[in-house]
Picture 1 (cartoon, one colour):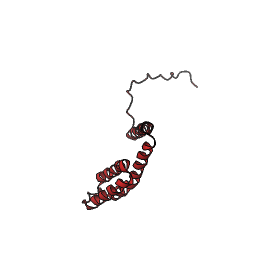
Picture 2 (picture 1 turned 60 degrees about the horizontal axis):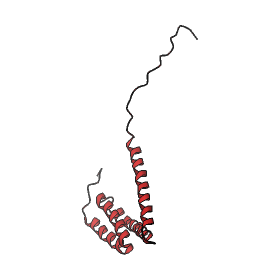
Picture 3 (picture 1 turned 30 degrees about the vertical axis):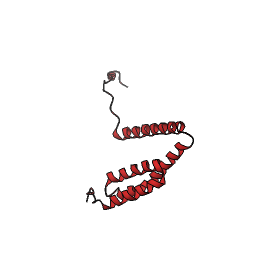
Picture 4 (picture 1 turned 90 degrees about the vertical axis):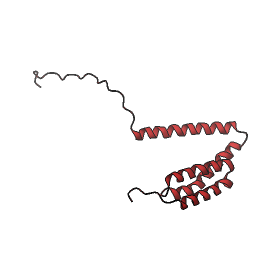
Length: 124
């Protein structure tokens, strides 16, 4: 190796501001954080409610979620906002009165979605 070549100059560290995380990473972080917060709230609610009331509420909400999938899948291609709202309303109705209220709410919302005019589909 020749001795007449200069030594490579070291570059000073660049003072660049930290970049914001990519949208996908930000979404994943938000999803994990909201899941943890929901789990903490759910655990606290179950511990603070008397006897098995918390378990009944959570089971009703889960039942409402399952029943709410019917109008959601009916409406996701027709009217996405109504589909999401119907899912949320069925979960709330299930938490309040279980399957007794979630099933009629799902039926009425499915009928409303079917009666609504189809939104313009992208690419159509």
